[in-house]
Length: 102
Image 1: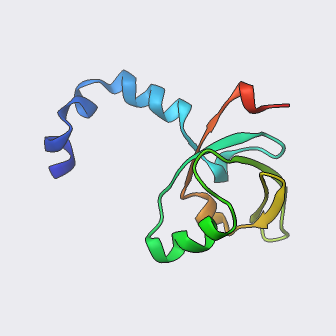
Image 2 (image 1 turned 45 degrees about the horizontal axis):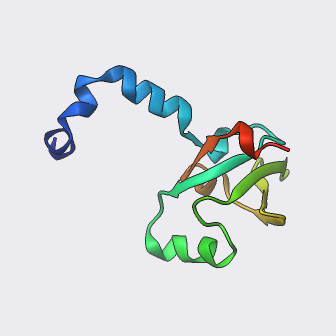
Image 3 (image 1 turned 45 degrees about the vertical axis):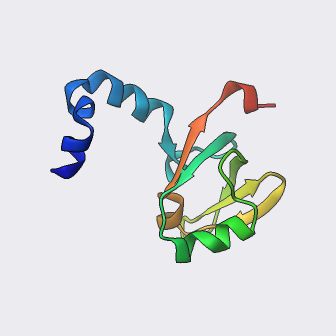
């Protein structure tokens, strides 16, 4: 695989990848009322732009406040409420941060 050839240390140190997976989660996996910080958005640019226009930038605070009847997350984004599709929330990499919690 080209990824492994470019980054051989990823397969050589499985403990680091497990630490990374603990530190970096997907928004879809975050429980309600848990404040997290957006790390990156894994979406193509045509799907990324609407999120950026609504203030969803790396470093912003996100907090799932409720779920729609279909299970899609409704998220507080730095004080603004935004409804997302579950699939899109699965593309948002976040990290827990005790310093962010009020």
